[in-house]
Length: 338
Image (tube, rainbow, N blue to C red; front, side, top):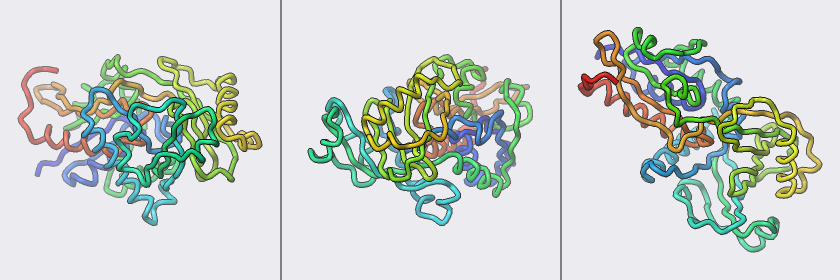
């Protein structure tokens, strides 16, 4: 079989997951990841990494369920393996609480997590400002450990890594056979996709080793996620906000909201603050097209725009991107210029 040079643009959790999927599944492909930023400088490195999906409006529910289930199953296998500590992946139990009873009391992902149930009246008394809650066990994936672990996994099967900013996919296509675009927010500039936009997220890292269960408000703006070395509390979802500086008012608001949910946190010491820009999009873009370069049709597979669900859906969309790469390599490409 013909040797295929594949370039993956982007080294966040989606990019590295995609690179590993291709490198481990298609032995005739050489995989190179090119990115300006690698761990610990990606958006995912600051994210809490809890697996909890949201519903996207224009993607078939079955596809969203598959993305989540495949990601959950992949990370569960890691959590159950001797690699769990190095990878920073483990089970996490807690509560998802709502000020108003949601229309969909049992969400589309409830069958894939463990022990999903509605919270009892007694449990809800801890949260007097909330009317309804869900309790379940999911997974947490700490990218500060997981991304370097994925890099090692990629290199173990011959994958290459290049620190470089990609600004022109047509130029890149001159020296490869296929491109996987996992550039996240960078796709706004790289492929002129104005549908992708920044969603500014600010969190605090606090020292509260006594806290073992996560608590998340259903509005998505207040959450407490215990981790291995610290507890992540947040947060903000500020659309079209490009600021990367810590906002002290945001920090004060985060602390106040989280103290209301978990009063014991008033005794916790703040260890650090972090800001990242999620790649917001109404729907993630997981599809393929072709670049016309010097008489060749070079497959271009897109996998970006996951918003706050990057870790949650990373392996599932990577498997979809792998299938799209397979299709584009073996089907007869269209002759029209794209």
